[in-house]
Figure 1 (tube, rainbow, N blue to C red):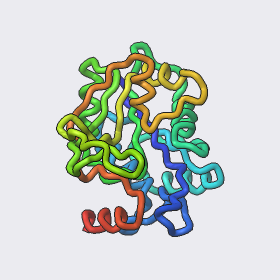
Figure 2: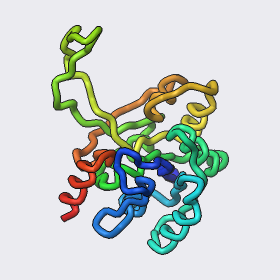
Figure 3: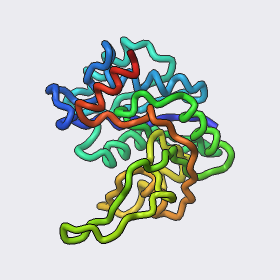
Length: 226
């Protein structure tokens, strides 16, 4: 089964600051998006990546990724205002699924330090027959449900998990998930797959697959690389 990766990287990174899109921020001398693609290409199964960039930065992304001399074939498309719409554009760039359908990973550029073993676990699970797979880690903090400014109850965290990327799907399942009614907003791609009846399986994630959102995350990433 062929393995392709969609990389939404069109976010402007307002919370991160720096005056550049998040994916173009430097992390120990290399941009976040290049580091994300280097992480994906460490998985030998991944052969193609489609990056959704901010429309006004498509040319710059293409220059950066060409200079990086990556092993995988990379296509850059113009993203959209929302992550979900950017993924839809990248998915459309893949074209129709193979027969049998291959595997499509959706991976946030901002999770550029994901270990290769997490990527491989996701790929292997889809290859073994799962329609959709997500990497997860346990919730470490106490979680409380709030109502009217006061605590309504304390949530049992034993069954809760934090979700990471890459999320993996059979190509035809992801197409079906994104073909649903317009306006269906979801915080991740697996939620769209759930809505069309796909069973979403879980594999172990990793603490280093955290998402770079603010300056503190960037400092943590710098420290890990050091």
